Length: 217
Image (cartoon, rainbow, N blue to C red; front, side, top):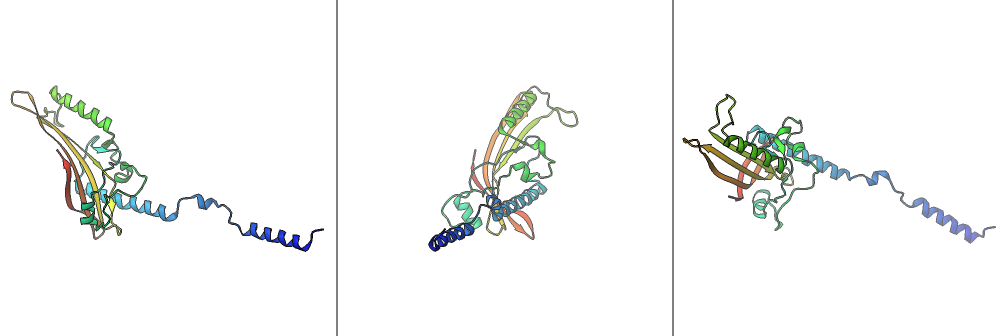
């Protein structure tokens, strides 16, 4: 027979076990706040890029857009000027888990415009060779007298706390050729630019505010 002291110890142990927290499946899921933030980021970024496309400031064409985000940060001085950042550090986007096509083209109407660097390089070389052979033609069937190949790559937007201002780092490149009167092929100077493009939301619509030069040749 258990003595009173033993019974008391058993009861205490049972109470401790009953009050201990048990693992929950819900605890293993991402925090709702994190999910809501990621969805808000995606929604605002999509609205921003849709406004850019509507304003025709995005190059359109096969393989003209990068299929991955560039990792270049927003420089501190630019973030400080336009977003009010007070921390002395360059600024990178929050984690969002989305590829450019998901954000820029959620409807999937621009699939051929996204490609990686390898595919873009192959396409550029093919077009240059076709132009060199004098076999590149316009939609009307005339021989092209000049050729310009443009490509844009973006960082995911960095937003201010209220989602009223945003900055996108843009890498743009352009290669060009032209045909001289004697039939020889000349080259336009190649251009590579890295810029920070600033947008502000007015009346619910994202609009361009300024462009800051970061690097280029």
